Image 1 (cartoon, rainbow over the protein chains, first blue to last red):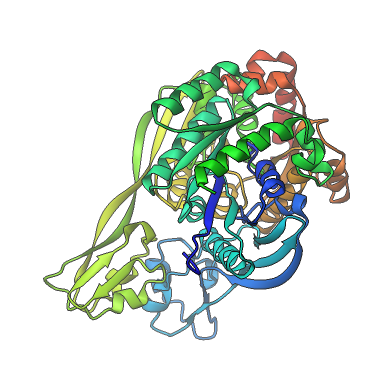
Image 2: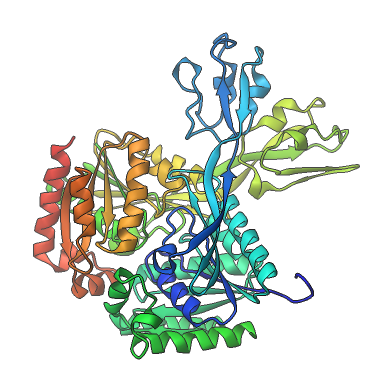
Amino acid sequence: MSGGTHIKQLTVISGKGGTGKTTLVAAFASLAKNAVLADCDVDAADLHLILKPEILERQDFTGLRQAEIDGQKCTGCGKCREHCRFGAIGEDFVVIQDRCEGCGVCRLVCPAGAVRLEERKAGEAYLSRTRFGPMSHAELEPGGEASGKLVSLVIANAQKLADNEGRDLIIIDGPPGTGCPVIASIGGSDLALVITEPSLSGIHDMERVLAVCEHFRVPAAVCINKHDINDTNTCAVEIWCKSKGLEVAGKIPYAEVTTRAMIAQKTVIEFDEGGIGRDVAALWSKVLDRLGA
Amino acid sequence: MIVSVASGKGGTGKTTVAVSLALAAASSRPDRVQLLDCDVEEPNCNLLLGMNLETAEEVNLGVPAIDKTKCDFCGKCADFCNYHALAVLPSDVIVFSELCHGCGGCMLLCPKGAIGEKTRTVGTIQRGRKDGLELYQGLLNIGEAVAVPVIKALKRKIDSGRLVILDSSPGAACPVVETIRGSDLCLLVTEPTPFGLHDLKIAVTVARKLNVPFGVVINRDGIGDGRVDDWCKDEKIPVLMRIPNSLEVARLYSKGIPPVLGMPDLNDRFIELLKAVEGRA
């Protein structure tokens, strides 16, 4: 809640990667009247490739702290290695940075006071402007940790943008999977739109990520993308959703035009309004109904 | 030899490549090949393989158990915990187990010896075997945030005397690092589109950071533009295989049939890939 009006949050997730989350979020950006866009797939962010944001403000993101051992003070007693549960103390008592989870146990047990915990830049967050409105996004350093924490920062920035500019909806492009960045992306959302495809893995992954939504009590709806790849499986998804009381908000056909739109750095609404754009617009109006927006 | 399969972008065909390579290898040397599904948030290999899986082990983390008869609520444990997994109130201690990384620090420092350890199950390791191929898959429990402990447990099943193929999750964050670390070769599967190229570049950065040798597999070859090829050429990155864009591949995959089983030409390409991979050992 902010300023007395509730800013609605829509998160687009999928479980399985590559089902079309970003393509659809970019299209929603085209269609939304008063929204902020947020890219929460922080370790492989692609939405900016279509929306081409102009960055207005940059923030450094510090993830977990990391241990550093002062070789001058270290006596080589081995207590840190004995107690580190992450196998992060390497040969010659140099910390293996990508294994260190910043817990501080090494500093706790070091009798020589040789360990410090250092803040470390793990990415950048951006506040930007696009042709469809304000955008919050980020870049995690490749191989970085604490992606969930960076997702939370992107959402907080999006809420700030929505507040400042009087926007009433945040559209979040979520990450694949079911782990910490997904959990951070759906927290506080009014609706999770799960994009699936009618493959056995698409269905399996959809069911798992819907279970995550249920676990965290986030309302969900389903969209079947590339539905004509396998009509039998599409039908199975529809029956399954009905049995669970889940709305299938849209079905989008397979279309290579989506790749051409991507290469042209355009949304499918801009690129093919009368074709696949029409199916996406129908989906969007169902989603708005669901959000009560 | 350990070969990991990663991508940056999701849905580029990691699982298809990992399973097809494993099948090609197992048919020429049964019982000498392991496939580990390290995408523990969304494991899909067995949807193509259809093995009967049995639970091999549960993955447990040690989380704090507070003995409130000994605790004097001094708050040192909560001050120490960098993950905010403990909150100390005037007459109570709350443990947020799902935030705990299991470092054991609170147990070490408690002046009253009031913190013991209990185990919490965060996932399982399952095992199957069929036609000379051994599969292990990790499965992160629903609602759990941290995949890395499950991937670590899974990688302890590696028999390094065999050809071991690891199927990674998408992205470039900690689960991917944990999967590809220590591989002899990483296959980066991409598609020739702007998203594919952008995320390939991130994945290449991760592989370089970890000093893991790598090569590229271009899937859906022909669907997009030539920028992935151009970039690989500029960076002197070997393109080890191309899978032509084909609706037939997508249709077979959607039914849970490894596309190599329905397309002999494709199987030949994977036999070639296997040779190329082993040539790099």
